[in-house]
Image 1 (cartoon, one colour):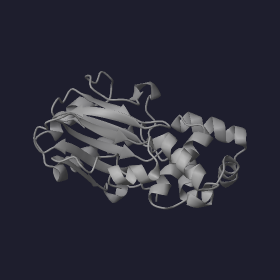
Image 2 (cartoon, rainbow, N blue to C red):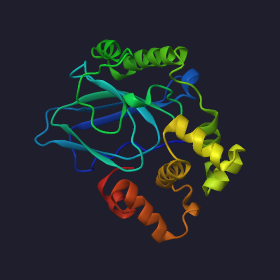
Image 3 (cartoon, rainbow, N blue to C red):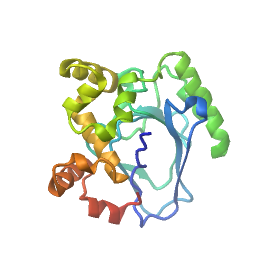
Image 4 (cartoon, one colour):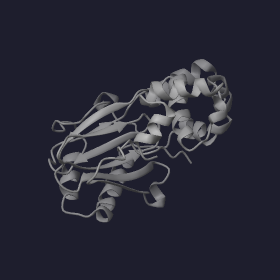
Length: 246
């Protein structure tokens, strides 16, 4: 099962808590996890979250300002998100390809403005605020079930097959062969369902696998791995592991 790492929280940061939990079994093919990121008390300096691409889509809720919510996804490069000195976010992380919502609603940067779309995000956020993380998960599961009924969340057979066979896929040609598609069909269908070209999707998934010391054989040599890692994360592997917990 594809298991991307959490975004980077510097080891030197104090008073910031991050927890995650797996969804109930009936949602396990759609949702990677539910998560909560918050300050334990007001910080002296702004906190920067080092967000790393994983091809997942997140729905997030700002629990300090419940009208602020959104759908987020990174593409092929990291983002440093300034969350300020006090924050409380809760979110749902969907597996790659599962989100079927309007792609124009998805942002790849900091979400700091009120949500104006048609999804029931603000009502959900207001229901979440008074609950502890365990109780929040029940509300989040209810929302996911609603999104499934609306066909805004659905299993993507293409990405599911790619992720199930990622260890054997070393190239876009391997990806096409595994999915029994022509290169042109793969390009069209993957772009349509994820927003990624096959080459970029493979780069991101391979990078995430490398954090677990998987798929390293897919890089031609150590130099290739370091170059690719730095291009996506902004750090060499050694620098990243020194700065962030993985």
